[in-house]
Length: 84
Image (cartoon, rainbow, N blue to C red; front, side, top):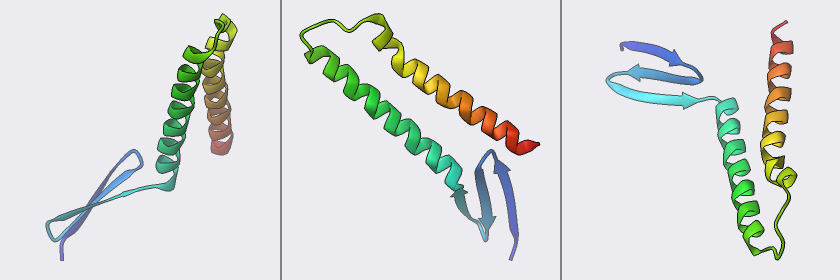
């Protein structure tokens, strides 16, 4: 049986007997779930904002961006610390 594999990022493609199988690591699945959850929260907040009888201040509009930026910075520092 001939078997070859090539990896791109977290996606590992394995070809065996002419059939391609792909395996995605748990880290990439977790990242996709996080992005989906964050998108749903932002969408929900946008819909809620249109139903409020008052206009939200600019700080509240920027809060999701700052939250995502803060989490991504924390994640990056944690990943870099793991390298050393």
